[in-house]
Image (cartoon, rainbow, N blue to C red; front, top):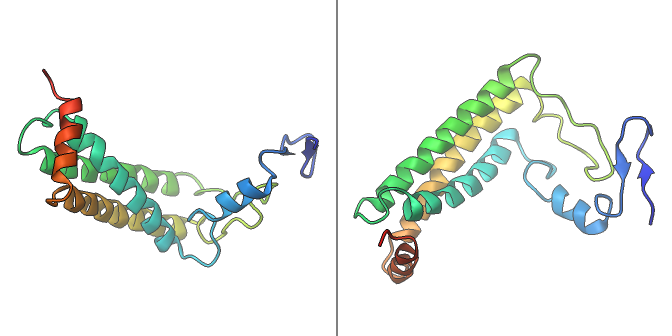
Length: 163
């Protein structure tokens, strides 16, 4: 296995054993950003759900209100607030200048989605990201407030509690 240029050797786009392996290609092409036949809104919805779901925990269990009865609500509101800030950043990125540039095909991504990299597509992605992020945070809040999960939350809360 050697390192070879994908097209023009002066560009620096190289095919290495890591980025051109079957596993790496299959993994990256299965992500919502590169999966074929998804609308930009659906791509944003899937990415937002994952971000909102995973942002809830750090805010709820390690945040400043972790030892109070308001920890779960504070975690939910903080996660929704951060998702809103990230959505504003996505919107600014999509509207600044000439908009997002289309990624050329390379050794890893065979067919990057062209509809995502327009101003309208990026706006749809950002709105889907916000909706998915808020929904993912609300789903994590719901799961963490069930009776089955409360003993685990007490253990995790005790690890990071202030003496």
